[in-house]
Image (cartoon, rainbow, N blue to C red; front, side, top):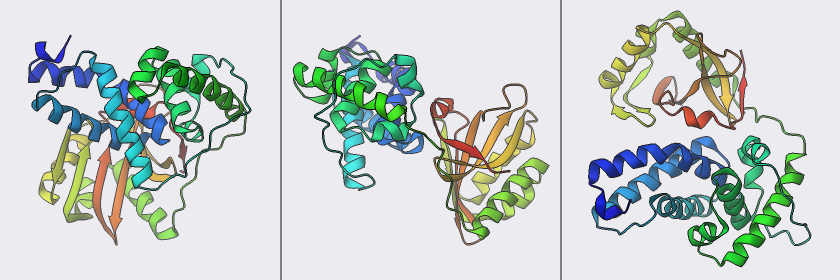
Length: 290
C-alpha cells in the first residue's frame, strides 16, 4: 500500500502495527530497550510529519526503517554515549541462526560497527533482503552483503563470551527510595505515593499517553488500586533502578513490564511506565533486587 492510498488514520494504524518491529531494530542499534524506545518515538514523530508534508512512500516498513536507522545514528553520535567501533577485517563470514541472534543481548549488538549491526538486525532479526538492507543503509548491495557476513561472524564470537546483567550503581539513599516506593505499591498505599510526587511530575504511559502535574498523575494510581493481578519488586533494567511488575496470572519468573522513576531530592519528578509496551521486554537485561 502506498502513502497516496492511506489517510491519516490508516497511516497511524500501520505505524502502531509496525511499532514492535521498529523497536526491535532501534533497541539493537542503540544497545538499549529504553534508548531504543526514545529513538522509536522520534522516528514516529518524523514519519508523521513527513506524511503530513506529502512524502511519497512505496514501501512503508523500509521507509520507516530508513528513518529509524538515521535517527539511531544521530542518537549515538550526538549524545556521545558510545565510541565508534572499527571494522573487523579478519573474520570469515559465518551464519548465526536467527534464534540465537534474537536472543543476543542488546549491548552485544552495540559492539558491532554500525553497518554490520544494521545488516545483521535487518536480515537475521527482521528478515529483509540484502537489496533492502542496501536501500535502508544507503550503501551498495555488495557492501551490505559484506557487512552481513562480517557482522554474523563477529556476533557469533561475541555471543560466546560470558554475559552478565548490568547492576545499577545506586547510592544507599536512592536504593531506599526505590524500596519504599515498591513497598508502598505492594501495600496499595497510593495516597502515600501521591504525597511523594513533585508538583510538576511527568508521567508517561509508553505507547499510550503523557500526563503532567501532581493532580493529573495522581489519577494514574487509581487504576492500579483497582487492579489485583500485578506483583511488584525492586530491580534494575539495563542498570537503571526500576520497579519490576510481575503478572500473578502468568509467568512469575520474568517481569511482564517495568516502571522507571526519576527523583529530585525526596520528590518523584518522572514516572515512565511500560505497561503498554510489552515489546520492550524482548532481550532486555533485568535483575531483581528484592
